[in-house]
Image 1: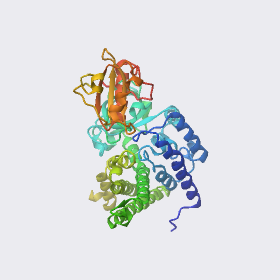
Image 2: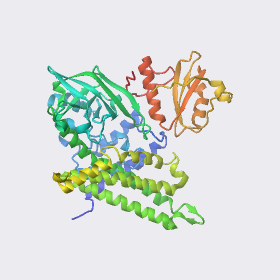
Image 3: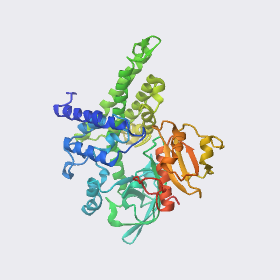
Image 4: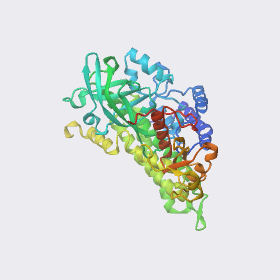
Amino acid sequence: MDLNLTEEQTLIVGMVRRFVREEIIPLELDLDPDASELPAEERERLIGLTRGMGLYGLGIPPEYGGPEIDLVTQTLIAVEMSQHRAGLYAPCYGAFGGAGLAQLFEATEAQKERYLYPTLKGEKRGFFGLSEPSGGSDPARAIQTRAVQDGDDWIINGSKLWISGADKADYGLIFARTDPDKGRNGVTCFIVDTDTPGFHVRRIVHTLRSAHYATELSFEDLRVPASNILGKVNGGFAIANDRLTRQRIPYAAGCIGVAIKAQEMALDYVPQRETFGAPLATRQGIQWMLVDNELDIRQSLWITLEAASKADRGEPFRKEAAMAKLTASEAGGRVVDRCMQMFGGLGVAKELPFERWFREMRIRRIGEGPSEVQKHVIARELLGASFR
Amino acid sequence: MRITKAWQPIAEVLDGTSSLKIHGEMGIYQLADANQQVIFIGYAGGRSPFGLRGEIGRYEETAPESAFVRLEVTTAYLSRYQELLMIHQADHGSLPACNLPVPLGRLSPG
């Protein structure tokens, strides 16, 4: 078993690392410390560079114009891409593009024409509407938004909460209950245009992330044609579940990248900073924090790469993806916290990225399935369904 | 969520005679004309050298017709700033007169 990067992976990782250090980090000196977007002309320039590298559109299947890159290499790229101030939730400010709502690759041709292809061209934006005020960790049971058939249409009533990007989106995937007696098998996914009468973005939900806010949506007699059902009636949960599983790997990779950058900054700082006549690096207390950081980073990195590797081989990877998300999000928080401590007062100042990473990393333990749910998934896989 | 605090005369806030005291915190603010119509929404963020005091203090550059101000101290200044612009857009059909166009989402605040 060879754990070294291939020659191609080494080349790609090097390219992305240089891109982040030479193109992204200098831009951040002029942006608000909480910014998550670039001026349009700057973003277009960077997209030109990533296209030139052949890395634009990560996550898009090659048959739709994406680069032919396996998930392990994509994970390595995601680790590099997140190594800047906004890297957790806006890695490289979107310069590498992305698959957007990957569920649309399973859409009908007519749906692809209206939604997928314009999204891939950057002409449309979508959102993913799963969580509700009644719950997000257990969407199969918590979904109360109802869709009732009316001829060739469905009428949707209800609300969604913690939805990112809905206020700027052209359409969204909304999961609604179509059969109240079937639990997880009674949920359907609808593609909804945001200019449909009855679709409302009611409020912004302010969180620890200053720029990248969530929204609360409400649907009042929202009429959607049956042709906008994604997949099958009552087949929505399978779509949601698949997305939740796959998303955990790049989500974990982002946490690891930030942790690596934080550790790098700390390793650079502690030999220089002196207290009581000696560098911090000579203090055992500091050394042990750096060691704990390194262990946290490596453990979560190898677990995440294992998950990506199983996915590439077409093997079941649900347990591994949950382990990746759990370890990376929790380890990332510990690493950033220790590094912030080493920097002292500067660690909590907005001049350095630690305070933003600290806030945003806290969210990572909750979003995309909180740590407790990940443990539940892992335990279920370890013990088998009969012990659920 | 709209700001519903009472307007304060901007001259009194800046010369310290107002009951509203502003310092160097981060946050958002609204400037209004003599009729108390909002003409500018701004924020003091992580790069503002003197926080809300500094940003409001340069109102003659951003909105010279300003007569009143109200503000909110918050670290969620970017999302709050966007929210207030979206609410203004929803309520009036346009941004405040002195705000430059920015990419914004859409809100139906009700």
